[in-house]
Image (cartoon, rainbow, N blue to C red; front, side):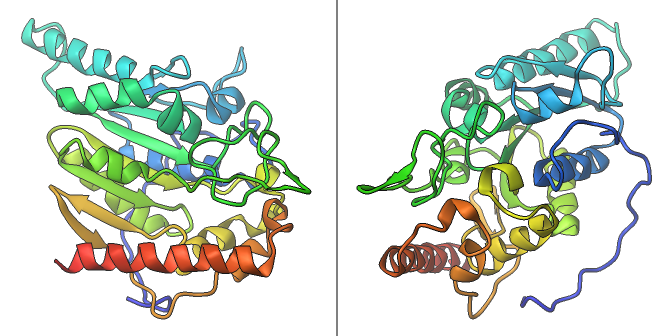
Length: 307
């Protein structure tokens, strides 16, 4: 599939379960992603949401953006809360206290609350096999608390805790491969997604609802504030992340890798980095180092998908 491929249209509800009027920044890619995810999930859902941008912008008393049952958890334990909800629903059904119908349990967190602070609770929930969906909205730093680096911050990016300087290029470690960590738990379904490709995102959430057992979806979420990018470029940046191979879209369905779309050749990463202030300090040799790493990782992913 190339960048000019046409997606097959499908019916999408006009109902909004993540309502307008929230306090997200202009051009927030994460708010768009949450909106799409909630549309795909539908109304029969209970969401546990870790502390982070979406919790702050959506739940300032006395208002709420959520039109489905929603629980604010701590930064580190949203997967544990979702585990408890899923277990509680089983008990209530067994005792005949609630109707025996499918209710999708979902945990949501940012990259900080998923890849760092919440990793222990998430790993435990995946290992125990709880029937829930975990959605990580990855904006590549702790944006809500001041743009601090996380383990999902890309190599070379400048943040408030990995600043550039005379002897610093910014972030000096490579982005943690969280989908691979989730897949290592041998769970039924893992996928990456991006709201810039909404139908692909819809399909993956629907697939995650269908599987029995844990599902993990890692969603790329552009942050104009933290990335120092123009708000009107958020969807474009999401597409560039995919088309450059920086954030490839794929599924791991019961251990089998499948590329959702493949681009050949990949766009050069400079088309993506030049639009963001967090990368403006990078020299040509550092950009080439990143380019080589992206190409290597993309080829490895293609091999996994073809085996």
